Image 1 (tube, rainbow, N blue to C red):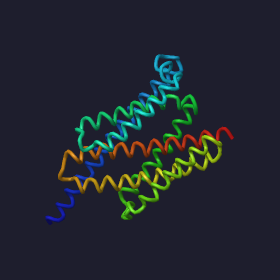
Image 2: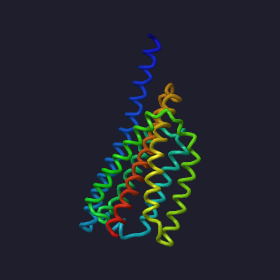
Image 3: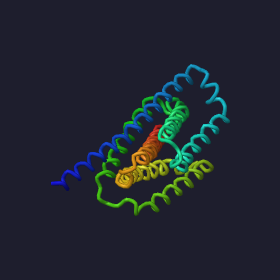
Image 4: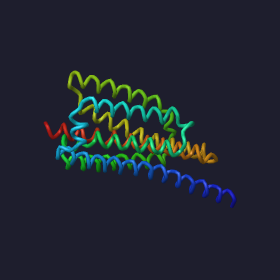
Length: 234
């Protein structure tokens, strides 16, 4: 009987932990969507942000460098940061992402952006469920995922210079980040059981987990949108 209550308590704690991760991720997604929506209409009307960001190539590079810096800073300095600081950095990242995403509806059309978002949500959701429920140890595929990321990066660089393989890159990116979604979900479970007795550390890693899932979803969305955009131009 005591074993039953112990397992029930652990499962309830895990559900709350996962819910907290997805709540943090969801807030980040809403922030990104709201900022992107505002920036798109500001761009259409030639407002301040449009003049400051979208007409100045240097500002785009600055935003990109800040985004990379936030991800590296969160990963490297998580242990020394407070929970509030880590959460604030994550939300700042979501704001900056929203600014850069403001141009997507103009480039692809609002309808394609919406459809790509829905496709990405389905793919992401299915992989998240698989990652939570599977009994397969996905950590043994860590090397495969890392190799896939390196190959994807090389292919993207080649595509920039030679302009080929765009659709193949899109499908590879979708498959890779679907796998990473399942892997990150399994790591959330592992982190919970490892850090269950350390509330502050668990809270910090829940933010990193939210960031990882956020990046997985964003990348799936962007690759789906890339494929849709290429097919519409064929």
